[in-house]
Length: 394
Image (cartoon, rainbow, N blue to C red; front, side, top):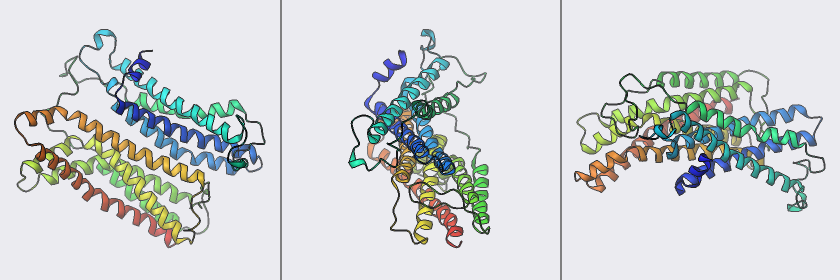
């Protein structure tokens, strides 16, 4: 009940982020139900149905990633002084965040079920002149237990991931109980340690793609909705590349901040670089995920166009899955940016109080954005080109 009251009394921006989670959950749930419809309509093609179910892991992971990012940025779950005295310690706040995530994902799953039943004609006749009849097996009875089991995957997975990501950390011996976690720290933040691992995984992913693309014979699972597939090793290489970019993102952002402060920095460069270093962990990982999604989309476009199928277009399910992955990555990045702005509001207010002009602060923000674009844009293009070269030459 407390979680519902907090959700109802949240600001419009927080409610919008929760609605985005519900929309992503609805899209992923609909894809899972379409997999069930394919299995019902094609009982002889069990392998194809399992392949479609396996491809749903990608939008599922994107939805869970967005749900965790939204739960982490929810102001209702941030520890504050005095909350422990009324029974709202870190563990209870984590439980509230998990419940809010489960409610949003369950709402999206129910919407997916209603839309799926509507397209099947189980509610009020077949819409769109029965265009989705064959895709959703409208002539066969729907096993409700199987449908509800599939729909429960997103809320359960997102809630479990949120509980793990937001679990209370034990404070160090010098931390005082009840301290405000939103107060800015005077000590400089340490550099993220994931950059070497990210670079290693990125190189390993590109090597696996190159080796698998030149291996004679063997085709991997085809994507549903009209897109052809590639060798399984190439798909594994893409996964390693994406993971490497996500791990390297914080370290690259920290290095970008250090570069801004090099060679006699002025006030603007010094402040912009220091802020990037402080926000490297918060902003870097979503940036790395966006770069991974963008490079994968570009490489797939190059490979798809080189195969002479540029006019074939995406099928509806592939288009929905791709939209979910791209949308969740961008929404998670926007959520992290809003969270970072909220975290440094004390510093911004202090600078304004001592007379810093607002135009100077906007210049600092523009410099940070430009530096990140200057670093991550060519990196994304390079990774995309290197990923597409082995597939084009195959």
